[in-house]
Image 1 (cartoon, helix red, strand yellow):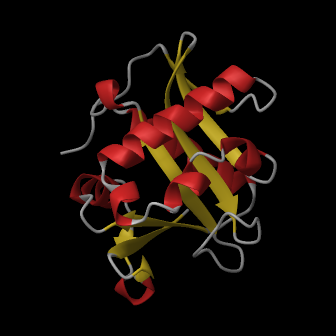
Image 2: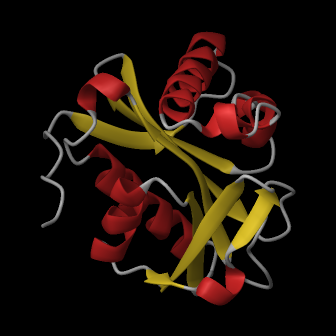
Length: 172
């Protein structure tokens, strides 16, 4: 079962990095989503990188999903050499920091963000997208599987002893 199509009023576009309110909204959205999934309980130091939206925007493509003036989701597209990517090598692109506002999850926003991120990776000439998902986020793992991502157990890794990150890739 795939996620429903997002409402037609959803727009996905690059972050307006010069808009402090939008940058703050993305940081707050990610902090809430990642906290809700237990990321910061498992690795408190991770929060600093999650909320560093302004820093990522200087070197990566930060996408936002907006409805009207409301930021409802985000994803970061990082080339292998951007400094944000942790897994991507060569000409791969890494999908990082995917988050959807808690009150609108399940409405197809993540699916739309992933599609836009794949388009951005293709425009960079990347043949493959790579992503890692914390092992207990089975909902996200299922979504990526439905979107054509294949689990790559050889690349699974542990940034800290209590956190297993499951890696999946997709040929673009």
